Length: 215
Image 1 (cartoon, helix red, strand yellow):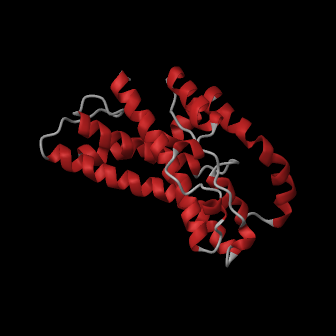
Image 2 (cartoon, rainbow, N blue to C red):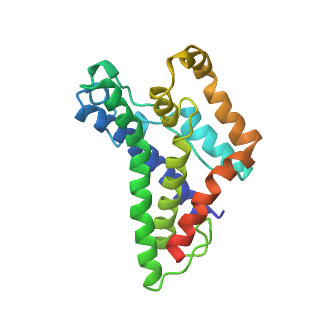
């Protein structure tokens, strides 16, 4: 990956992670919980959202190791008891982040396909080879697809774990609560020690995206 693409990837990743977290906060506010708004987390200021481990260390190590570059920001504070219908609303709040990524992915994928249909250069599976504007759109689509799918994995602290927990049998929950603090270690292990597993999950989606934009 050349310097231009690396910078595009970084900008897309940071921007998309921030929008992901803001989406959680806005949906929570819509359902009665203004905790995120009061904490100043509905801001586009990256400093309010950056998590040193998930936003800097993990993406940087992944890039250096040639692995899928994924990450996350500091979770927005949510007070479930303030939601009007806590169980239903928490499901929607949890899904709001990945949903924002999928909307961005679709938007930029359509833009990329339009540009290619009007004489743009076709990028390869990692964006290289196209014009700057094509690479910009394709990179945003690609990054948001990875973030959306990655965050739906049922591993704490990812959003998929919160969704999974809402449907979990009560008898599982004591074991789950003991496991939750170690979820970040599981994510770290998957990303850096068994990347083939993560690639197996993400590659079909990445290939489908590439097929759509060049199709």
